[in-house]
Each structure stands twice: as C-alpha cells, then as structure tokens.
Image (cartoon, rainbow, N blue to C red; front, side):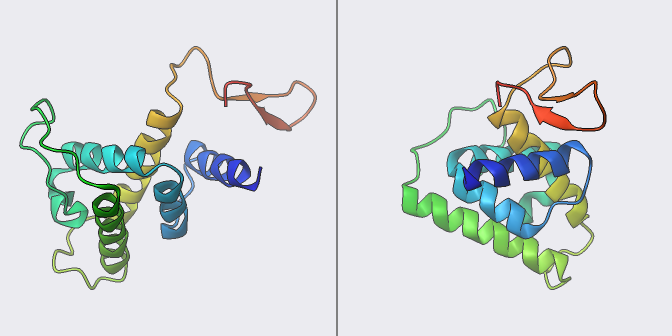
Length: 141
C-alpha cells in the first residue's frame, strides 16, 4: 500500500503542477521501468534538445520498427544513466547546460502518468467531494 500511496502522491504533484524531484523520478523508474523508458523516448520526441540527457539509442522516427529489445540489466543501466544525467544537469555539471531541467522533469512526470493512467478530459482521475475540500481518487486509479 505504501508503494501505491507514493505513486498517488507523485501523481497529485504532477496534477497540481508542483515541481517533482529526482527522487520522485527514481521511484517512477523503479515502479515501471518499461513505462519510464517509453516516457524518455517521448520526451526526446517532444524536446529534441534533451537527447544528450536521455542518452538512449532512440530511432530517428518514433514510427520506425525498434531493434532488438535490450535486456533488463541494460534497461536498468540506461535508466540509471538518465537519472544521473538529470542530476548533473540540475547541478549545472552537464556539458550541455542550455536545457531547462524543470521542463524535462515535468514532461517526464506528465508523460509517465499519462502512460500509466490513460484518460480523457471527460473522466478525471481525481474527484472533489461536495462536502469541502477533501479529494479522493477515482476507483480506476
């Protein structure tokens, strides 16, 4: 249950447009590494200048057929490298410094949650109770 609570807290941060931390991104990477890797590819698609930070073998076009799947160990190394690059970028120690790390982290979180919990604007994840400012999560989450 603590894992679900942490995921919900991260979702609420993202939903309320609060800054997410590298620890939050690390947790998301541990929770579902495959989803995190897809999210990183989508970030590079949306922010091409972030490619050196993501440092994955990303095809020229997202529509191309992917090559052989990397092993779980390789996926873990890629994810750890991405998180390390983000940390270095945040501390201004990354060779390319003209990238907005806050924008990358925000997009990573948003895209990750969109992959985890696909939705449309008609059905929201969070419903506000009529009796005050107490919020609760929809049963789908």
